[in-house]
Every structure is written in structure tokens, then in C-alpha cells.
Length: 214
Image (cartoon, rainbow, N blue to C red; front, side, top):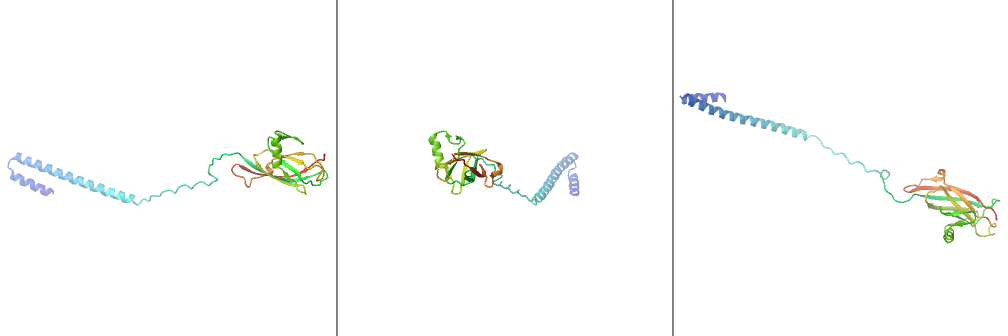
């Protein structure tokens, strides 16, 4: 390209004898060559940038994008549950009732009393009709061997109270004084096998009860 340009300039120098005309033509030719050089330079830069961009895209396409698996859902025991209610406890009280001589007493009635029932050995204080209805609807009776079993459910207590009554007079071994038994609820007697939610488990107790004759 340089030899071609020199040849053009020499031709124009012979063509234009006047120095001013020659310089004018020379300036135009230099200007045109600069424009062509700049266009070539820009084209080369664009080609180079395109090559770099294509190489970068090709490299990026090889990067494996992996998504993390979702976190496992918590098990039911790990979940925080909002529950409404009151704590409860099951009571399983068994035993035998006998007299001073150790003879088993049948048909003795036993009630597990409510918390608000204040009692003495022979009486209940409170609404007489309500107390009477409660005693008649919730008792268990001993069998001929004096054995009994009470199953109940209610709020957890530090102790439970049983009322033991002889209601048949002189039958079944004679007349006996009513008896109150307070049973302490201890951790040793608490079975938590079926506990869950608001239920705190089952309290188990075996009793041996002696009644005094009237």
C-alpha cells in the first residue's frame, strides 16, 4: 500500500507543475488514507472484541449450574404446634378392701372425689343433691373378694381422694365406718408410655384398705 501511495504522489507531482496545487492534492490523499486506516483499525478492534466475547461465552457455557435441593421438611416431633386445652392425666387405682381380721368385704362402694369436695369420714359438705347424684353415678363396688379397680381421667393432681362406703348395713360381714383414703401422686407411679399432647400419662397405684366396724 505504501509503494502504491508513493507512486500516486509521484504521478500527481508530474501532473501538477505548480507546487501549491501539488500540496493541496497531497493533503487530500493523506486525509483519505488516514480515514481508511482508522476504519481498518476499528474493524480490527471490533473483530478482536468479538473473538474475545465468543471465547468468553463458550467458556461460560461449560460451567454447570446446579440448584441446591430443598431443605427436608421437619418431622412432626420437630414442628412447633399450637394447641389449646388443659393438661390431663389418667388414673388407674386398684386394690382390696377387708376388715380388721383381713376378711375381704364385698359390695363396698368406692368413689374418686372431685377436687372441690371437702369431706370427713362420714359426710360430704356441699350441695346435697349434687353430691348424692355424683356418688351414685361414679362409684365402683368391690367383688366378693374385696377387689376393685377405678379408671378415671382429669387434671393432674398432687393427690387423689377416695371415699370408701359401706351401704348395705349388717350384710356382707357387718356395718363399717366410711373411710377416706388420700393417695399421693408420685413420679414412681406415673407411666408415660402413652403420654402426648396435653396428656401427661397414667398414674397407677395398688391399695390395701382396712375398714373399722361401727
